[in-house]
Image (cartoon, rainbow, N blue to C red):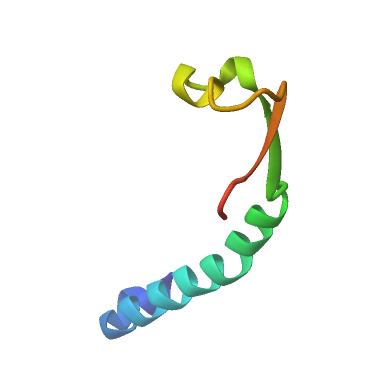
Length: 64
């Protein structure tokens, strides 16, 4: 922007505000698009974890 080329002292505050706005708006939206809880087949787990259960499908929290 021409303003930032003339006023070099504004570069850091403007970049900080743009990052803050993008993290504050886009990140919660992106996280909310994916479900918190998910299911996985026991066949896809590590052998020691698969042997610890007799279920066919386990449910887990993604921890977001």
